[in-house]
Image (cartoon, rainbow, N blue to C red; front, top):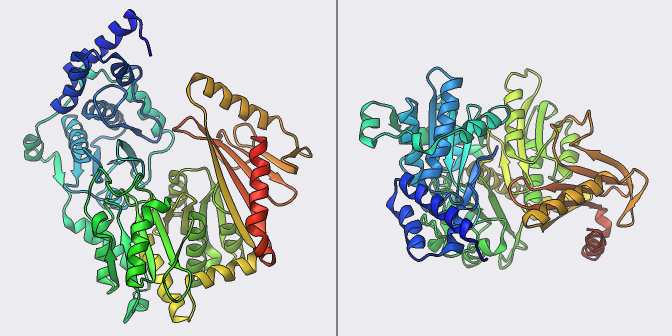
Length: 566
C-alpha cells in the first residue's frame, strides 16, 4: 500500500519508541533493519495497531513491533497483570509454564521477572510442560493465578499468552475484564523488571521441581482402573507433534506397562513444526505419520497431542488387519469417552457431564440414559471449569466429564482445563476394556449409533476481513436475529430460536450466539469468532441407523442447501 508522508512519519516514530523500550536485541534488530531499508509497508504492518490482550489472553505473530508478540509486549501485559494481582491479593503467588514454541522459554522468563520485580512470588517451570501440568500446579502450589506461554495448535509463526486463575482454569469474569483494563493503563516506559539471579536469591522466583510432575502422575494413575492394564498386550502409536506431551504421555504409559511407539521425527520439541503445516491433531495431515507408524507396527490405537497437550486426536483400525485407520472426530471421541465413563461409574445418576453448546447432543442423550445430568455451557473450556468449581461443594452431584468438539476433554475434577495427557490414558484404558469384552472401539461406536441414531455435525467457517467485513458480520447476525419461529431457512421450518445475546432465561451468559432449532430435529448455531474475523456455522443432524447407507448423500444435500443460504 502507498503510505502518505504523515503515515510514514507516524510509523517511524512508533518504531523508534519500540527500539528504545525493547530489551531483546533480536527483536529490536528486526525493526532497525526495516527502518534502515525504509521498508514502510513492513513497518506499517508491524505498528499500525497494537496487539490486544483480550479476555482469553493474547496471541500474535512472533516478531518486533506493537502488532507482534515479543518480550516488550509480554512484559507490558505482565505488568498490567501484576498491578491487578497486587490490588486483589495481599501476597500474590503465580505459576508459569511454557510449551515448545519458538521463544516460549524467553517469554516465560520475561513474564516471571516482571512479576518478581512487582514483589510477586513466581513458581516457574524450567522446561516445557503441557497445559494440564500448569493447571495442576496452580492448585498444588496454592497459586492465585498462572500463565501459559503457548499458541496451542496454531502455525509456527504464532505464540501466545494465556492467563489462568486459582481454580485451575482460564481466567473468567470479572477478573478477565479487570486485567484487560489494567493492561491498557500500563505505560511501557514504567514496566518493572529484575535480574534472574536476584529473583532467585530473594526467593521471589522458585523453580518447580519434578515432584510436582510426580504428584500429577499419581493423580492420573489413581483415577484409572490400573488392574485393567495388568498383562495387557495393546500397542500405541503416538505423536506429540513436536510439543510438550511427549514425556508425560510416555511416562504414564510406561508406568502402566503399555507398549508405545513414537513418531521419531515428531518426537523432539521443535517450535518450527517442520513436519506439519499446522500442529493440530484435528488435521489429518498432522496425524498422517502416526497412522503410517501404526500400520507398520500393527498398533491398536493412534494418539496425537498438540504442542501444549490440551487437545487429543485418536485414530482406530477399521478392521482386524490394521492396515487402515479411521480418524475419529472430536464429537466421536467425546461420545466414546462419556459412554465409557458412565458405564464404570457406580453413581452415574449423580454424575454431571458438561459440554459446550457446539458439541454433539449425543453426549446429552447418553448422559440422560444413565440418569446423569448434562449441562451446556458457552464455547470455551473456562466455562466448564466454572461448573467444576461449582460442583466442588455439592454433596449430591459430582463432576464426571467435560468436553468440546474441538478435541478438548477432561475427566479429572482437580484440573480446570482440557487435558490431552490423562484423556490419552483413559482412551487406552477404554481400548483394553473393550478388548477384554471381545470388541473394538469401532464396534462400540456402532452400538451407540444403533441405539441412539447417528448424530452428525458439520462446521462451516467464513472469513470477513477489514472494516467492511465487520459490517458484513454484524449484518449477517442481525438477519438471523430477525428470523421468526414458523418461518423457514434452507427449506427447514424453524421450531425454536434462541438468541443468547438478548433472550432472558437461557441459563447462559449473554453472548453473540444464535441457535435455530428445526422441526426436523436438525439445528444450526451461528457464532462469530472471538479472536478472528470469522463467523462459524455449526450444523447438527440426526439420522436413524437404518438409513446409514444413505447418510453421506443426505448430509451433502443438507449442507449444500444450507450453504446456499449463507
